Image 1 (tube, rainbow, N blue to C red):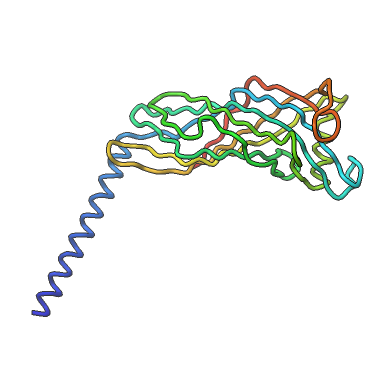
Image 2: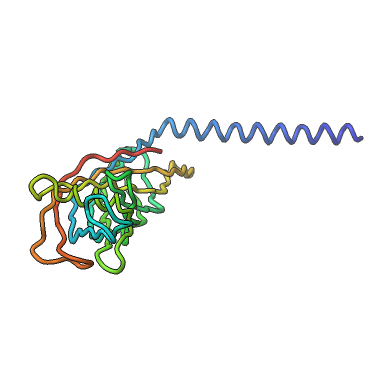
Length: 224
């Protein structure tokens, strides 16, 4: 009788394994049939205002123990779903901003993202408005060499330079293939290079700032 019970347990285990394998194969076949392409993204426009660099306890030529960056950056990003068979559910979009130079120093997370959660139908485009605002309060603390390098980048040659940012978007998405949801965490990286000029009036946080506008930027890279 003990052997019969053992045999029954082995049969149940085999059936369960076979069932799981069948489910896995079905999901793979379903995925290959629908072929949901990776999302695409590009910077549609970007507006920079009140960019001010304050170097503390030193000068902007490399000395000093630290610095503060004040700025406001509004970016419109187009998110495109190229799949003709599957929609995309965006469960979370978390943008953050880095400097292209200065070792990719962080300038903080976005204050607002609209829309932040949405469904994107097949072969459709959605514009996401992202706002970074560090123009008031304490700004963003950075190392002294970062502040000095950013200050030089702003001034450029002849007083009008170009500031390079990288916006990184950590997203959580779901592809719904019939009744089967497939989750992914794509990372979107968007280079944003903005020509800047001096503002006519001083910005908040310590002196006159610079402003700039970008009508169309580079295409973003998307990795899953």
